[in-house]
Structures are given as C-alpha cells and as structure tokens.
Image (cartoon, rainbow, N blue to C red; front, side, top):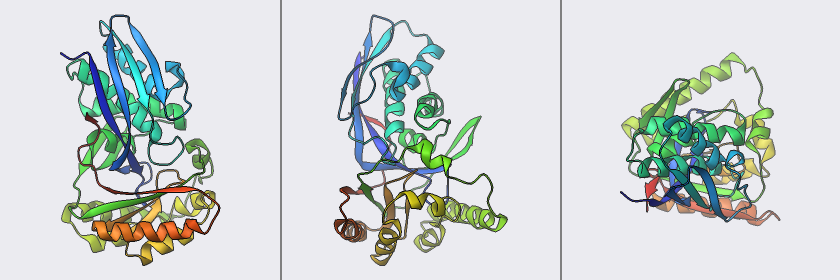
Length: 307
C-alpha cells in the first residue's frame, strides 16, 4: 500500500442562492493540492504550506484540526505529514477552509485503506471547518467530498443527499480581492425573518432540487433567488447589485453570493453563456479600483480526487 498520496481538493460554492447552510456544488477549475504521507512517528504534522501564510501548528490549521479529529477516533499505528499547496485564497467565499479540511481526512483515509465512507469523512472535516467559521456546517464540505450538487439534510446527525447535475450547466465566478471572514458575515444575519420570506425561500429550495432532478433550466432560473440572506450580506460586497444585473442580462440562469462572499457566482446553460457572463462581470469590476479574478467551470461531479 502507498505511503504517500497527492490529491486535488476542489473549491466549492455554498448556499447556491436560496439554500443557506444546506446546498452546495463542486467546482472543477480551481482547487488546492495536498500531499499526505504516512510516518512511523505518531501524530499529525503540517510540514509545508505554499501559497498563503497559514499556521503550521495542527491545532490552529483547519487541515490539522480535521486530521486530529479523525486520528484520535481511529488511533492508527502510524502518524501523518501534510503538505498544503494553497490555490484558493482564504476568505474568498469558495470553500478555502473546507478544501483544506477535506483534503487531510481524504488523504489519511486513502492511505489507511478507506475505512471511512464519505459521510464519516465529512463529519471529521466539519471539525476543522468549525475552526474557520465558529460553527460546524457542511455546505462546502459535502460537495467537495461527494462531488456535484449536495444538500445537507441534517448536520447532527450528519445526512448528506447527492443531487443530480444537469448536463449543460456551467458556473461563472468573480472573486473581488477583498476578504470577508465567514464569522463576520454570519454575525450580520438576523435571528428572525418574516414568515413570508421563509415561505418564499423554502419554495425556492424545493423548486431548485426538483429542477436539478428534471433538468428544468427554466425552473432553475426561477429558483435561484435568495430573499433571506443576500439582502443583508450584499452590503459587504462592493458593486454586487451591478454584477448581478450584468450577469442576468448576459443570460445567466441566476446570480448570487458564493458562500459568505466576497465571491459572486452565476449558473448558466452552456459554456458559451457562462463565458459571456464572465465578460459582463469583468466589465463591472474593471471600472473600479478593486482587483479581481474570474473563473468559468463545469460542475465537478467527482469531488476530491487522487492525482
């Protein structure tokens, strides 16, 4: 059995407009690479980090925290070293912390002969994700580990539903180079919402799930609307309304905040439309002094994978 594994841990989009803390999908165009290595010396050590300045102490790094949780549960007769090649900027809103948390447990599981299923891996990865956001949630982790679109039916006990991916769907993302901490973007959310907003939101979630199952792009367009979270969080993202208008005018099925922001995603039917949406988004930010990056990606139905 191999003593070392190199893996690709993908970026993800959480919430997917109406599905706050429960819906997510997996991206193909961007992700971290990690190396996990078995060692004779017991324990978890992070030995290399490239890309961004992150802590090497395992208990202060999301990859280390998730690895420690799994390690303490399984008590393997070995240790592990972790190398992180970080391509997803922390605080970008496309699952940077979840990519790290998922990567360490996935790599360890592979090297131990796959004793854990995807649900258990998600469970331990949630321990690391909680370090970044101050609460355990799996809306980024589930699509990273399962691939495609996922719905977290319950976080405790953890129950993840895998949803179908319509064949022609593509994602466009714009990432303004500002940082929004997940903990801060959660703090501005109201503790109570009007009943009518709740009714609209859960109708949209149900419609979105049905649209994915039936490849109904028209229904998907009607469902990609968030009346609960977006009105509060969009104030943290400069020019959000202008980007959303431009994306929709360029043919997007819908446009919303990716995770807690500042990234903004759009879903489109066809790669050509997704690229037109990318150009429209770029045009908005090119008139500002804010640096940005954009991506067009198919939906990654495999999720995290060995390289």
